[in-house]
Amino acid sequence: MSLEICYEAEESLELPYEEIAERVVNACLTAENCPFEAEVSLSFVDEEEIRELNRDYREIDRETDVLSFPMLEFEAPAVFPEEIGEEDINPDTGEVPLGDIVINVRRVKTQAAEYGHSETRELAFLIAHSMLHLMGYDHMEEEERMGMEARQREILDALGYRR
Image (cartoon, rainbow, N blue to C red; front, side, top):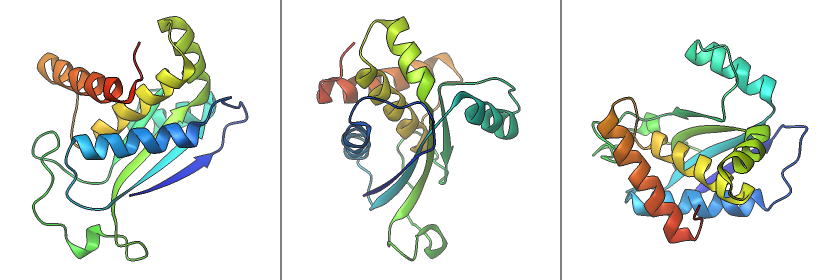
């Protein structure tokens, strides 16, 4: 697994975000039995940047906490494609790009305070949430939401990132 991290935000996170990201990404891939070597891109941005991305890609003109940009299509959550085509493999790494995660640094801080837990737990939650999106999970329907939330909780609890 490779994780490319790009920190573009002016505001800094005063925590070991690279270590947290690696732990959570690996735990998600393991928990969902990812059958291939995967690569994930993770960017940390300011409120204005995530608002622009949200507007450009989702047609929602407001900031958000996290965006996920999956590269693969799934028939169902974590039902990985049986065959990966050569076009789906990064020729430089031999890994399959799962997608991109973009995190709003300000929201990590404000949501941690709002929900009464640490910034570490909030960051871990946002990464786990996005990783599940990259692996075919969604929360548009109530049943999907409940399943995704349960899976996030299981992964985060196993890592010790409890509310």
